[in-house]
Length: 278
Image (cartoon, rainbow, N blue to C red; front, side, top):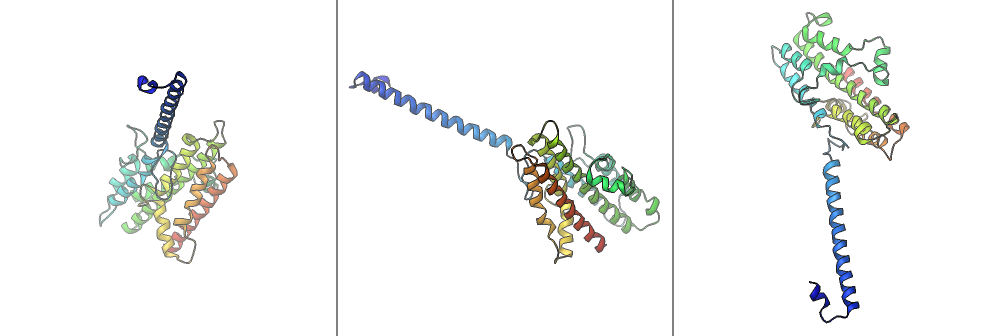
């Protein structure tokens, strides 16, 4: 109390003690405010790691596309594959990965998006493939038409399952390209823009836990070629460094493109191995 502070003290002592107590109260208040601020920032900006990658934005829904792929594959199991059920998942979504409360994310949406102007997609288009080449291939395999007419279930199912993983890889490239474009745009690099897009690239590539994903393909094909490059772990530093390169404060267009190009080369290694295997 003020009385206790001043008891037996001169006016100058009273003033000094009061100032000291006030200073201590203020210091404690500042420290407490700083702690709250740090905790608040941690709650807002800290996102759980996805594999060995830590995103700077919320991409949980994006990563759950691997659950739709798992449902797609499950529908095609057995002696009598459920082509109609698999096609419904492909076209309408499996309900795991959503763009909004009312809109599902679909694999068909990946397959029909025009990615003209992006280096990865343009390489396919330049070879003579149409914008919807993935959709045409997957639909034919599910319907048993075109080159798939009269083929065994084993050939149709194997082909379409591989196509879907190739498609998800293809769309992951779109997000890396989008991240680089956004960072170089008028708004500049930001975690909500370019960072989020790069995060989406990893989320689609890895999924929630690595299963039923393009990343899992790298694990399997690495095992088939044990004396070669280990893509499953070797690719991670380039996803991480690419994210750093498209963030504000550490932005580097050249570093982002370098990371992107190495990632594409590693994807090529994985799928060349798959071609040799099959």
